[in-house]
Amino acid sequence: MFIRKSSIGKTVLGLGLLLVAAVALTGCFVGGNITAEETISQSFETGATPRVVAETFNGEINVLAAEAGQVSVDVIKRGAGFSRAEAEDDLANVEVTLTQEGDTVRIVARRLNAAFNVGNSGATIELSVPAGATLELSSSNGEVTASGVTGDVQLNTSNGDVEVRDGAGRLDLGTSNGSVTIDAQAAVVDAHTSNGSIDFVGSVAEGNHSFRTSNGRIKLTLPAAAGFRLDASTSNGKVTTDFAINRTSPDDDDNELRGTVGENTSVSITASSSNGSIEIRSEK
Image (cartoon, rainbow, N blue to C red; front, side, top):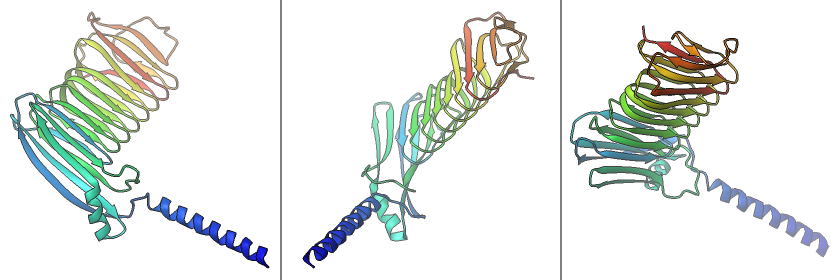
């Protein structure tokens, strides 16, 4: 009888420990479909070409070129929970810091307790900056875009699309899962994605340009008078162009294309995909 009670006691204790462990694990998840928002706004006086650094988690970063001499910031914090009260309380776990050192403006949104799953919690950053600003933007999960900024731009996200409109300068653009879209003039481009398409429309400056995707198509639309060296290859797809090209790759190999277009060999373009077509088109 004693042994039987002891066995039951051990069983109950074991279940209790499992229950405690389950509760502990559940406590590490901050989820729920209900969200609460809070917006933090601030403006900074700057020169014509400030450096703007922005980092966030689980949220977008969107930048527009606007008034010269000023960087304006809106950070929309988002708390999550299973009730309105829980969501509002969770806003305190999203920390936002806005600082300026000289002509550098830095915006950082992070979760205070990184051990907790963020669920729907996060922060979106909206910026207006001088057109000549340089940008360094990164999100752990969300779209990152810049429009009208002519300074050097670095845009990176772990999960989301990356887009540059009316850009110039040096463009370093990357995402792990999403498309990359670029409209720029006289740019130097390094664009890469692990899973998504890459589209470029505009002109490129002298130098080396790289467009890489592991799974998706690449389409580059360049001026009809452009001259460049081309090294394009795909493991599963075709490489095509309507430029007159002096080929250095075999004519019968349609998944790679190497050669020169025109006389300007100071421009080098490398395009590669593991699974997708590559098109090099001239503007009509």
